[in-house]
Image 1: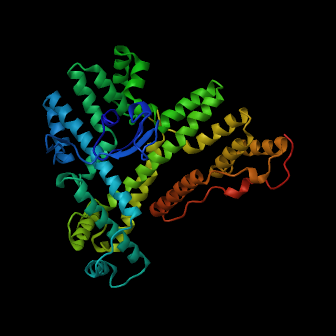
Image 2 (image 1 turned 60 degrees about the vertical axis):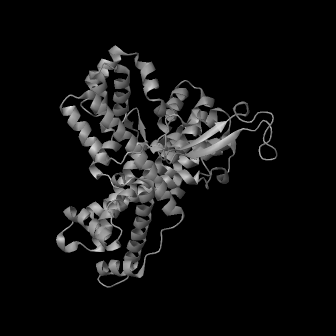
Image 3 (image 1 turned 120 degrees about the vertical axis):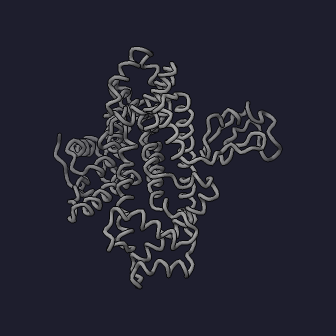
Length: 448
């Protein structure tokens, strides 16, 4: 168990598997654990103590960031490392705790608002209770639920970080300063780790070319790429990249294994990012009294709204637009291959899977992946050609072309959110591209 908990962050959730020889072996434990049993534990780290003293520090992300920047300005390199590494750990703890609170408040349902809270909300509606007002009540109740959960999970100074500091941490900005601090102290290996982490999320930065050349000359490039980015190697993007390499080598069995394993990792990373987007909707409701909390929301959005439009309609509309922008960005953040955003990231999986399954002789799997790809890109001529080929040459029926709906739904929801954002920005709807039913092989197809 101790091995499985190494490097665990606060509020991180891990799955730990203990084989029989490290568990209870051939003896087992009575009727509870049979002999030769493999034990599986799901663990979440909620507190760290040493000698009865809790190690979680009540220091805000903003204080850690500013202390690190001040040390960087004065060339105090060890202090830069101490403060920014602590900021990264605090950011991880904040995100994990926030994710847990958002999940709990979504699964269990938000608490009911009191009559006093409803009256407070009602004044923003001008005395009316339309459908948007009811939606606003739901949001306010969820905000309270998340706020109360954070009060239990985080220390007071860590519950509501500065939004600008959060953005910088999400963009991996601390690593651009950490790599230079480690370089100044002569620790090139740690500097390379930080540089590569920053590079894979900021390929267009002016910092990349010169430092890239330096680490190529100083270190074994290929080995350091793997060693410094082991999490990336085992991420959805790492699996897809390895799968595409196997595809180029015509190793289709390995292609299928790697790309199929990328899909659940993609969904997990995307779901996490999408859920964390909701944090911006509740971050400023810090006061116990709901009316004070809503006043703070109005203050937060005041720079973007005219003074005479500070009502619940405007606040909710603007907040939802910010939420949609964050959700759309999530798809790019998850789809970074070697630092570059790969367009049509999810459809790419099924484009390569359908051909790999075909080469392996698994025609039904190939048909499933072809149908999934074409449901995401209904007008793609190449995939239309492939479906005609499968139908005419292998006598596959229309019912054999069943897409994986859980992945098609992701692409369709993203398209809907993009259309909503376009409407919010330009006041006119964005034309929907294609229809899913356009490709369905219901008519007789020509021979290839």
